[in-house]
Image 1 (tube, rainbow, N blue to C red):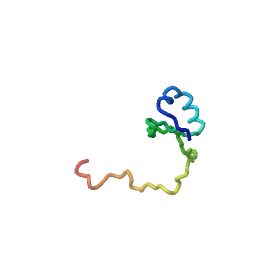
Image 2: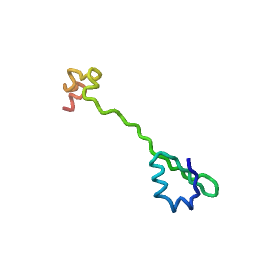
Image 3: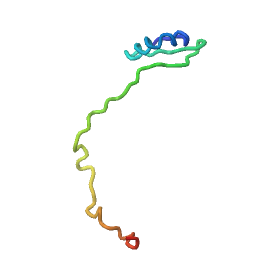
Length: 75
């Protein structure tokens, strides 16, 4: 982890971004107090979708599209 004063960081932003993209964290301080943390974004890679993976988990009732008797007066 690298600590750097805000005034220095403003002048070196491109270099700092390259360092962060390589995996290092950078703390930017102002008056010796940490104010900004630059760190690489960690995104979990999801496995690719598998067609048919929900087979047997989902079912549709036989009368799914049958008219509803409760709404007979509105139809």
